[in-house]
Each structure stands twice: as C-alpha cells, then as structure tokens.
Length: 362
Image (cartoon, rainbow, N blue to C red; front, side, top):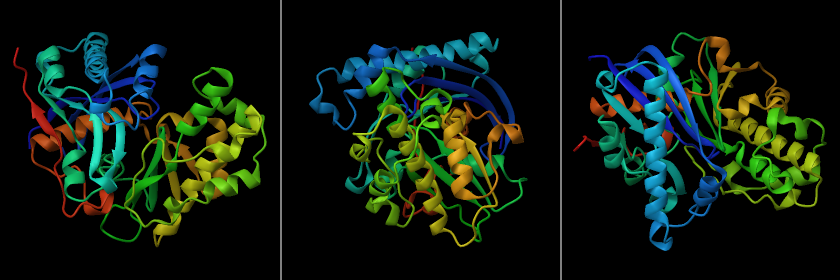
C-alpha cells in the first residue's frame, strides 16, 4: 500500500494540551518521523474541560462552546506543526484526531471523545479521521487502549518478551512476545492523574515536576494497601478505565509529600499487577508518556518490576510524541480498512477498523 503522510493529534487524560506529530506510514510500517508540536491549554480551559468529565453532553449548557474551542486548539496545533516544520498542508494526506475523552464507561456501551471532526477538516483543509473508539465499544470492546498496534509496528526488531508502558493520566501496557501470537494490552491503573490532582489541590501546581514531592516523601503502606483493594486489579484483561475511576481518599490526611509518594507507589504497584495476566513476564519495559519524566515514578517501577525500565528514547523514539504519532498511524489504517483494535487489545468480538472520515467542505 502507498505510504501516506499523516498528522496525529492527542489531548490525553492529563489535559495539559494538544500534541501533534507527523509520520509517514503505509498503515503497517512507519517509514519516517516528521516534526512535532505542542499547544498548551490555558488554566481556564482546563477548568472548563474538568467540568465536562463524567457528564453526558446533554447535561452541560457549555458543551458546544467547549467543543468548538477544543477543535480550534487542535487546528492551532496542526498549523504550528506545519509552520515550524516548513510543511505545506497540501502535502498531508490525513489527520488522526483523537479528541478529548470526557466519559468512558464501556460496560454501559458508552465512550465519549469530544471534538468536531468536520470542523477540523474545514479549518485545516485536510481529511480527518475521528471518533476512533465508538466502533470498538459497539463490538463489545473496551474502546481502549488503541496504541498497541503502533507499539507492535515500532518494536518488531526489539528483543522480547517486552512491555511498552504508556503513562498518561491513566497508564496502559502493550505486552509483546509474551507467549502467543496475540498482543495482550490493557489499562493497568492510574498513571499521573491522581498525582496531578493531588498536587494541584495542595499546591496549585499542575503536577509533581520530576517527582520532587514524591522523592521527598514516604510511602504510607496502609494507605497503599487500601488503594490497591480495588476490584479492577482482579479483572481479567482486556480492561480499561475512566480517568476518575479511583478513590483518592486513603491519602487525604497525608502530607503533600507523603501523599505524592504514596500515589506514585500506587501507580507503580498497579503496573506490576499487570504481570499476573501473562504467562511470560517481560524482560524489559519501555516507557512513554509524561510519567517517564517523573524520577520517583521510574524508580518505583524499577523497584517493583525488577527488570530494566527505560524511556523509549533509548531505542530512538520520541516519548512525548508517541501517542500523537499513534493516531496518525491509526488514521492511515482506517483509510486502508485495516484493524485499529483486536480482541486481545480491547476485548472486541472481532478486529475493528474504528474511526469516521471527514472531508473538508470549505
């Protein structure tokens, strides 16, 4: 199949802004990586987004306005990438537009990612693929994670068994070469979201930069045990989570530092539980997403996993851009009718090519 140039866009559960990344791919192999860009969300817009979390659209009067603003910010990210990378929009074949997840309840057959694919196509003059998750959920899948096929494409020549761990607001893992031809993948538990919310509430800062608060605190083992007493960790994968799936109350009486340390340990311990569901444990973990910048998180992962845990940069990848790149890759797969999810990655009844195509009208 012909190689296409795709821009992937991602605004994840950390809600810090829009990542944009250009790749060249035929939907099976990635033949080139291009420029990247980032457009941050203002504090006011993040507050607006938080107001939509867990709320179905018809119950919010400002929904349409926020969707319009979000779409415009994604168009800004495309424009910034094209400008900074000195690339013409005419040379881009498709945009993969994930949108912002505000409600994810696959057990109810619901997953909502806001963002207007038609508006983005009109604003940019480029074909857009959006709404990646709904088709998977309609087939009985979790609608997440959707990055495993991209992880597989990137790591075909890496020694296995191998795990690729993405730590955003929620953490998810792709297990490669763990004893079968399938690709087990699932959300492991919280990533940065609980830590970010804790630090924001206690200090006004958006996150625990470099894990500094956690590194100066101590893990409260009793609170950690309470946090781990969640039925999610006993569920067989595939499985996925909403950003607000966990109750943070066990750390409520702790200091800022001890709370950060305990929540960081919680995310790491949740990752370690993922090994219970594969017959062959990974000999190496490659980490992408914002969590890999957190020194306390990486140290905690190394401690509980007992094998090398490294940033994906060690194999030449761009950890901050990887999820955006993935949605460029998935957009091309949609255009070619290739699966974007598998029964082993989401629990769907069959391989699903999810996503709707929007062509520019103006």
